[in-house]
Length: 498
Image 1: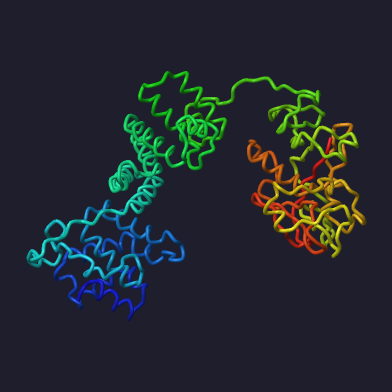
Image 2 (image 1 turned 90 degrees about the horizontal axis):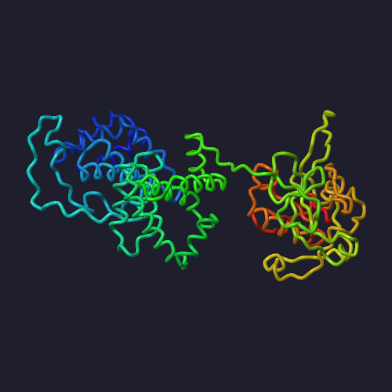
């Protein structure tokens, strides 16, 4: 009986757990499944003792990548133990078959003939060398490029660069050269960089850039600018690695390398930051903070500080409290003298809450309202279609400035109105709960600014003052506006016009 059938029979009788115990080999000897392939007994023993059987049993088949993970175990075992690939693969396939894991389409014996030459031409039973099969072993099938790339990436993340290089080469080799995906070439460049082959890395990086430009339908200059602005997903550290290779391959001068290194570190490149830390390089250029009070100098994205001054950049020398968003207000707001724009707080509105045992603590979540009622005209009603085409919706933007009746019935509005941070400017509106339009504008801006660590509310679900009907309001979360029940708890970020 074949190993795969014997394993399936034993597991059906005694359970999957036996696969983790070398004792299963004793049961398999009764099936005489090692006679033709004696080395498979050694392989199965090492698969169990090295923990691969346990890893296979713990695979979560609900995760799409589980089959690739299984194949990764196969290749990792072969590379670490040195067994013949055909025999080791056969044992893993037999395990998959016995466990009903749909890694392969057919039974191991049917899918291909196995070369019966034992590992190192010996077996631990002292049996004679089995005869050479009448049918020669077929040529190995081509490696699936996608699988090879995934396995290479896995090895790369584990720091096994030689193994990663082998599979990256297989991925590239099995694709028509002109059509190699740019991420395959980028990975190969990253691997060669880790192996200090800077010249080889530069070659793959150049080919990667050419293919990436083709994929994105950009010319060379456009792609270069997109990389500088970190607008290409997955390529955030690309410029650092590319220039690293150029410098260490003596292709660019040191001052150019250091200038680029510091810039990339300031832009948040993890690789560049780590390099600076390792070699004691300070990426922060010396500069003088320039503060101003002339509102004619204002730009979207400026910071307001607690002393009433503004600056185009964030400074650590004093406390920033607001960010300037939208340097134009509505007609109504202009009539009130608030002509410069809107300020959004960098902090969440908080309110005191008393627990059942009398403890007072800060509360950061507020219901939109506690009553089933609509805010009065001219507060607008917005539909799902309005939200889907928000850039084309031309409705009033002053909902947030109108007085709200019975403020106690509207906790989100109340939290904004009584926000505790003092506004250092003279002519401003009071703090208010922003409309959906203003919140949308705020987040379109903040995604382009280095504010993480300054603001508290990036990952929060925010209330807006906009309503859908008597039962539903509009919230903002994860880049989108949503219609939701008014009494659910969300965070409040106050806004003021000035």
